[in-house]
Structures are given as C-alpha cells and as structure tokens.
Length: 478
Image 1 (cartoon, one colour):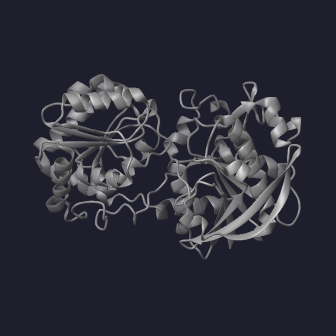
Image 2 (image 1 turned 180 degrees about the horizontal axis):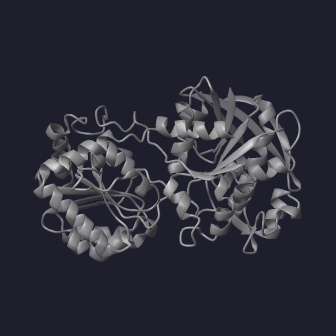
C-alpha cells in the first residue's frame, strides 16, 4: 500500500478559484483503494461554506515558529466521498472573504501553510511515501523536506512530486524578506535554488527540489521548455526535463453527463443526440432573446475574459465571425475591454449575439449542451477543461493547437473521416477565422459528417479515472 498526501491551497467542494481545485478535490477518489491511500491537506479558510465547516472534527493544535513569531496551528479533519481531508486552521492567515490576497501576504501565508502542513503529519498519524504538491503555494514543501524536516520516523525517505497547473504564477517576492519569513538559510537563496532574477521564487524552489515535476498536459510540458511559454524558467525546465512529464486533467463524468444533467432542458447521449440535443438549443435561444432556429450554427464561449484565452484574436475578426448564419453565446467575466467588446456586439447584433457577463455553473452546463461548436483560441493553455466538457456534451471544439488543447482535440480530417474538433496552429486571427468558416461549412454542407464528429467527440474518454491511472504509474515508478 502506498501512502500519498496531496497538499494544496484549494480543492473542490471546499474552496475553488480555478482548475487546480478540481484536480485536488476530484482526483483522489479515483485511485485504486487497494493500492493507494490518498489524503489531502488544505487551509481551513474562513470563507469555506458553513455546511462543510460544521462537519469538520477538531484533532489537535500546536505552535510553530515562523521567522521570529510563534504561530497557532489547528488541525481539523473531515471525510468527503471516501477521501480524508485535513484542514490547517489559523484565522490570522486564512481569514478574509477569498483565499488569496496581495502577493506579499500570500508569500507569508503559504510559508506558514507549508510548515504547518508538514508539522501536522505526526498529528494525523499518516506517514506519506509521496507528498504531491500543487503550484507555487506548496513550492516550499520539497525545500523544507531537505531542510528541517529531513529526519524522524514520519519524514525519512519521503519522495515529492510537484504539479505545475499554470507556470505563469510563481510566488515571487523580495529576497531578504522571504528569507526572513521562511526561516531558511541563505544557502537556499542562490541562483541554482530559490533565487530568480534578484527575487525569491517559491515555484522555482519546488521544481528544483522535487523528485518529479508534472504538468497538466504533455504538450504543455514540452512548451514550457521554450522561452515563449517558459515564463523565464525555461532553462530550469530544460535542466529538469529528465523528471518532467505531462498528465492531462480529467473532468468529473458524473457531474458533466448530458444523460443525467438536471441543469439542461433535454437529456441525451451518444445515441440520441441527433433527436434530442437541438431542444436545448431552442430553449436557450428563447431564454436569451436570440432568433429561434434549430438549424442556426450556435457557437459557445465559456471563459475568463483575458488575453490568455485568445480574445484579442476574436476582437480582430468579430464582425466577420458574426455572419448572418451564426449565433454566439458568451458567458464569463474578466478584463473590462473584453466585457465591453462583447456587450457592444450584443447591442450591434442583438438577435445573434448574447453576452452574459457573469458566471453561473448552471448556465455553463446549458451552453455546453445547447451549442453546436465551442470556440477556444487560447494563446497558451496548460490543460483547459472547457474543451473536455464540450467533447462530453457533443459540442465540437474549435481550438488553437497549444498545451492541453492540442492533446485533447483531434483535428477533423475529411479524407480519413477522423477527428473530434477543428484546430489551427498559429496565433493569428485570420487563420482562426479560416478554420471557423471551415467548421461552419461542414456543419451546413455535410451534416452527416458533422454528426460523426459529434459522435467521436462523445466517445472520447477524459474522465478522472483515466488520469488517475497515469498518476498511479508515476507513483509506482518512484
């Protein structure tokens, strides 16, 4: 039996700001329970919903020294869907309305969390064989394990994995202050360890000291070794390429299931989508004030509205995209310029563009179920979950070939009759427009071919059980 301990700053259903939470909260329950005992440590944020806090049981508390102060650490526990979750309590650090705040506060908060989580291991009585760290917030864990937590029955021979969910976020702060906060010796703050470009960098420490480094798709693992995607750490990524690998995230196939989804108008599956899927489209068109026509090419966008997601490409050619025979439905919030751009096109083309500048889980399900295609032209995309949900709901993705999008969407080949979506390679608005128009021509001109693409998309397996098997292989190889 291998003991695996996930340590992370967020996890569903307790706290979520992004895809990281889905991995940490969903993946553990899919491991083979006969071979792996997987548990999770999270911060006990004050903003976690009361329904979960009320189910946590207090285990113990103790004090640790952070820099020159003594800090309280409470340890709570709760079992959820068969997985044991532990929570580190300290209201000074984990108060406030959301999990993250200003970077200088987060640097101290997560230095505390890393030490507290490691110190809690004897309290929970669980000796991990492998600690699986996630993102920069837990980057100090492999470092502390080499430093003050390198001996004793609970800490000897622990191996570490760090997963990079998005290399853009690294936990960078002033070198002297970080040295003071972490209590680590200056030996650790050199250019081959935690120092980068004059500052301290938590993620760099984690990547340098972890036994294995993973990221959330194999293409992204290759991309981050290049200067364009490497966020100034490409040299380090190349140096660690012998322990670097990519495993695509999954989605929860129980939550995202067009056959049982209660948020959508008409349920359907891979066999019945031809007869049922359009009913969702017509209901959505009615609700959003779009022209009601079951044959119109309806395209969805569910996203954070940021540069990373390729919205500057859409801005270039939005007028051409909004041709007479297309409808768009957009859901999400983000940069003001993109929110306003979509509001403008909603005003300009009222009966064929619907801009919903807010976020709603239920509405996202309705869009995945109603649309014919889903547009996602990202500049970079470590994994991406929206295209996986689209495939699951038989909504054909139109994506740029980067990161996880390249690994999960097979481009349509009309000669071989293969593929689950449409893709373009260069970050170029007119190349995107060309592929978009090609997809549209298949939809209108070759309906049987289009339905076969939908059929293949719905057969693709991106469930967590598939990812879990790959992580199991990784852990065994260590």
